[in-house]
Length: 431
Image 1 (cartoon, one colour):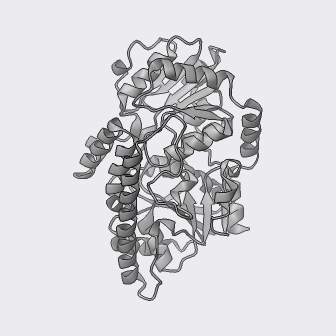
Image 2 (cartoon, one colour):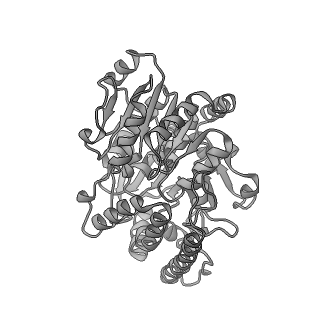
Image 3 (spheres, rainbow, N blue to C red):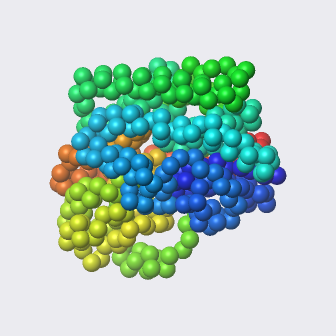
């Protein structure tokens, strides 16, 4: 039996998808990952085969750099980084304007490539990233049964009167201008309509008899898998999801041992704070420098993933800190007492699985809705990354260390660890 996993050429997408596929690998079955060249090493490390499939112009093997992207994509990436400095609504508007090129890239050409992969691999089961719209269009047009995995916060799949790209909830300390929000919603509605028209035009080429979509952002596969804990999802929103769905809880990978990190962990028993802004937003050296300034006076150990930020830009970092371009996040969260994050869904679900409270600095996309949900649950709090001072970040970390809903967070972590997402995914597909 063969499982085909279809993933964009981005480590942050591939890691959770590959983790789900380990349930098939561990059952002695064949796993083929259709993705690009940049993440070939990740595919190999999991012991999977790779079938080449390019789903977009850009790629990210772990830490993204604009200068390593193809022409056009480099400028788009720099534009995104600049938008994050202007504010939340400005960033969401920038992302909305780029949505067609980002999410529905070369739809007919990609669809033909996907169908070629299907013919060569002949999979029994197919798992596809929800944001790989061109690949999902191909599967839909070819009437191939597949599981659609929402790797981000569940609001990445719109339901009811939601509009893709417009946050249905905001963290408590975010107060966007009402007029700017109204303009953003209008823009997102226009993008939705244009995106859906493009989806339908490609669908008409691939499957002339298919019914057109009303909202392409609301389309999903035969089975919907959400990489998120059911306990944090509002029941009224759950009721609007397609009937065939499952909450995975989390998709936490097993990382290779690192003797240097094991030695560092064993050398000190003070509380550990892990800080990372992910593979994209580590470019915000100003925010990472404020995080470093916030943590320096505290009696804690610090592990900080600096990404693209030069070490010198962080200021006077204590010699006892563990600072690298990238760090084994899952391993360190397993020892952490608190974490500072941009609020990406991988970081959030991995922290929750480890029972670690979060201080969130959300910048874009579904990070705002995800942060709001964590605040409602009492498992973290969010600050504006462009406005929060070092003192405010420090105070939030102190509260995370002392004042979280510890019993409920510990219970959620135990529940997520008891039934890993890979097992849930396999049961949902195989039975």
